Length: 253
Image (cartoon, rainbow, N blue to C red):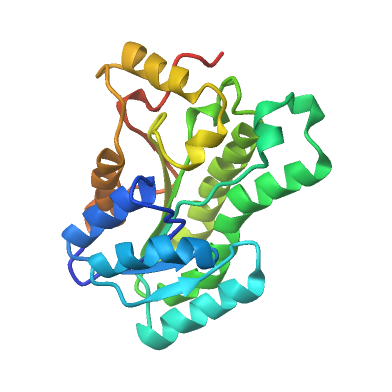
């Protein structure tokens, strides 16, 4: 599905990441991939994974730093000349803002969560869309906590709501350039970032019990859907949040 396509994976942390499931599947489907890492500690994790998928374009990028985004864009332009897709798998909130009361979220905590988890997609689209001269696709990751209150998700739910709204506005704006923007909402998945959510195992158990397929979705499941959405086979799908196995757990209200 992705033969002769070149894509950038932003947010890979380790081999249990949703981004890793997407990277493996898109590579299997023929894509040539580039990867980013946040810092030296994560570089040690990302580099061997990227090389195992035949990638030699592994670049630093803090999505909250415009200069690093500019340097990333310049490096991709120099190496490839163009880009076909971007996977945005970035989200972060301070632990106290996930576990405390939403009314006690600090101004700084709100800024960090919204800037890192939502504005980063806008920043990447601004920088990288010009490299998609023949059209392309942006894909991000969201969660049901954007629509309903999910215990212990708190500020991240608000950030994901902003992210989903950004998907729709970007899709409308970039559609004239034949660039599509979508999100996948896969439900609860046990990843490194999910460890910051209190009582996360209960969310997994609720999903197994209540979801239509009575199982937890895996990063590989997300990868299969992502490869389709990033391919030309999904050429008429944009501005959507696409759900896997309901994309929710019934702890929300």
